[in-house]
Image (tube, rainbow, N blue to C red; front, side, top):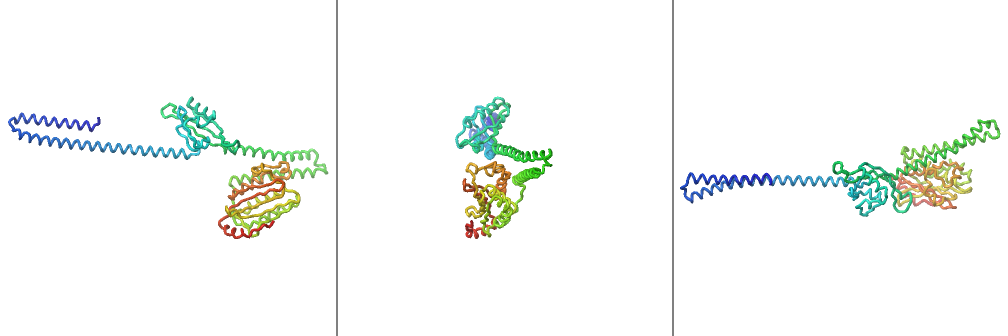
Length: 448
């Protein structure tokens, strides 16, 4: 019973008692009062008592209603805050990059976010139990250990989607901790799944890079060491061979210098330290400069260089970096070509996606299709023996790829074995060149 109700009942009892006392006093003081007079006076007294009682009751009821309304408002505010907190929690859980899974101590899933569904390849399938989450014994061992020991557990698992292959493999780091809703009692497990596939890939690339650099440096370094030791042991006095030894040392030192230079260049490009100065460049002039520098090498290999770029054709690029891209592509096309072959540089406009397309085509042996996806990787060589014999560092195409990406473009290759290869660089067109490019696109003709 509420305080207000107790007050109302007590007030009613008091009023009844007052009326009873009044009737008793009236009977004792005025026993001879007429019935009519007594009735009128009693009615008036009852009316007065009723008015005061009703007024008090109404006031108490009003106060009670106000308190009830305040309680209802506090309840509504609490529910609104709880709803906001729930929506905030759901929004946070849904937006985090980590996969979150919470289960109770009976392995029932209490919550799972979209990232966890993606990482564990659940899609839209319902997941109510831990067995719906994954069949991997390692996952169940993690959750079981947390429930048994009450301590945090960290582990690494792998998931796969679709056909077997590295591109469908995902490596996840799992952090699991006990869920305690009441003091010292384990009510479930809170787990976070973090995708470290990219980190694993970068680590593998780093290890391969170090291994490749060590291998590439070891060969010329061994040759230099061997010939220097030969000269020290008396070869310096061998007039017939000492000059040949020195030339070999110089050639291998140049190979090491080129390798270190390319490594430094590639590192600077990838780190974003290279600043590009984008401007309108007449492409034909750049190609002529590149051909001029590589003409002795082309003559040595018996390869003809053909510049098929229209004089009016302009691109938006950094002049020095564009020249670097073309030198690497044309140099490769010369080295991996047949005697009497050709290297053809042409350019076109892709109106569908507003890109300038620069093509470097050769008439060499071509590249087998299984090698095409990897030719832009560091140190990747289709023909390792021929590449080293030609003096390449194995980083030229990687530099081409990253410089093109720095321009906001892309680089790729098409090839047919026995016919030749065509390396293609796509560069975005700046707004100042769009109208100009449309003007010359209709005049571009096949010059070669």
